[in-house]
Image 1 (cartoon, rainbow, N blue to C red):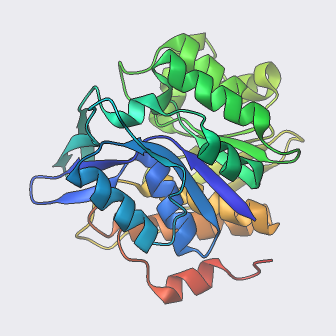
Image 2 (image 1 turned 90 degrees about the horizontal axis):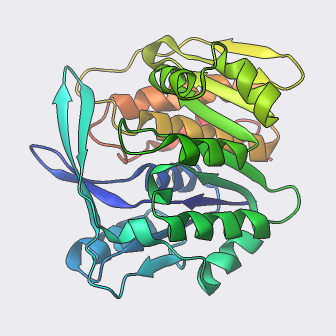
Length: 294
């Protein structure tokens, strides 16, 4: 069962190294690490960073046929990352290729075979890019899950865009900071209740970092999962994306929700113990996550 991840691929520029990143690219990387067939729809510049990014994703097992090459001279994306007590702070470089993704023939081909499509809000800031994702969501097969991993950055997404992205999804993942942002944007004192009542969401995953996650379903169920302690030496970059990848993988496998949350938190803690969003994933961890796979 193929998953599609839609949005930015870029390089995370840490003080000591550059590492592959971009939330949708991270999701695709981890789905591939788990053995799931996954395609990334994105856009890179006609430059060395773009070629290296595509090569790294392809080596990791991601289908890169729908990663577009920008012909307008826009560079491959990059974001400057600083760490404060292991927590990441980002400064995004604007005007990059990933802000101009099209719904072209290659994108249409991968979407046509998708059982889940995951997207955020960052790469939809340009009107034509949002129109491309809207076309993709309209073209997805019957039964294909639309998953929104908000990935909000303060000051970089407006109210109307966030409302559109949430309304286009059936499942949403957000963290506690994003819950507060959504509450202020829409005057919602109960964000989870608003997502179900106003937008008709099917599942909402509210992550709390090391404290774990709560998953809510439209039929009134709630699942709570404690977090796992991450070994020292890593950072928080990409932890939420790793969680999302496991959540999607387990949903496609038809796994029990409580077990899916346990697996997703365990996997995210491993990523938090490593530098960057796309570390090598031990085979033993993959086997643990894959228990009960279809």
